[in-house]
Image 1: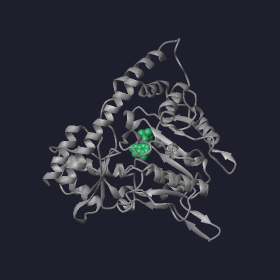
Image 2: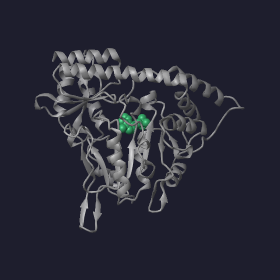
Image 3: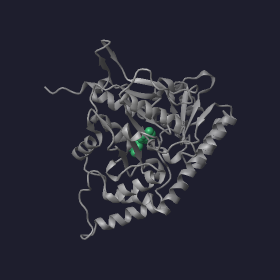
Image 4: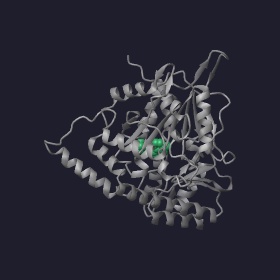
Length: 404
Ligand code: PLP
């Protein structure tokens, strides 16, 4: 008789957004006349930029022509895209990253979930609290639910690093040293950013302790402040302790197109083994390459015209962010984020829990946001609104909240 992977039974509840969708669908079904404004899930709403659709169309033509047709893509990505990434995302920022350290994929969600496979099960992980749920859930699925410490004879769980208003939503270095550290800046869900000096402390800590940082830079395009690093490789010594994840979803609207990449520097060695080689093996064995058409669209993102068009899209969303931030502050809310990230993190008013505030906003203003507790215990009493909506809807939503 086959046995199921019982680790799946240890996962907490159902995935946050499916719970929200159920509640919203039930409300919409019994209130068909109400216009619901959705500022919950972090999905983009602007159409693909013209440079992207042009590149997609051109690549489709090539695929339909015998002379330019291409079959399987190289597992690790086409050179034209890996070179464009290196030139624009790294060399232009003074970071030493080579094309063979870039692994092209279908997005940061898969990579952030899959990367733990190259590490032994008895590694101890540390995550921020609140956190993007994928990091924890994929470790639980793999069986990394607790680690036995022979010295103390105790099982230790995942280290949750509280991110609160008091620490500016940037975690303290943990006293008990983790092996794998997940950091995401600019942060989902709190919208906070980390300064280069603070990130350097994490890099030094990881190097001193032999830990590895998984650095999720999915929202790097939204950074507006000078002292905030776009890549962890801007910090000295990061090549020996950090893996970086990137997505084309939020900077270029590829949520439905699917493209991302992961950087594993060749200097990152643990237990005498180069992690670059391990990830290359994993990627080559389980993944057959992002589609040629999509990789050409990714390349177009780095063209001069592409950079301009996408900067305009980011500016559009950040105009929403500023509107939400200022509107809610004027209405007396305590508001964070929205300066280097497309997320606004607000304190639920009058001592409400985050799910109470979710129900209140849905029923009284017909607005959907995301309850902070869905991202971890420190998110309780907080609430996330995204700046990815359409401007007119965002304005209407804030006007409705102001009238409450
Ligand atoms: N990482 C973070 C922190 C995210 O918030 C998201 C999506 O919301 C992702 C990764 C997923 O990115 P992708 O669309 O490239 O899979």
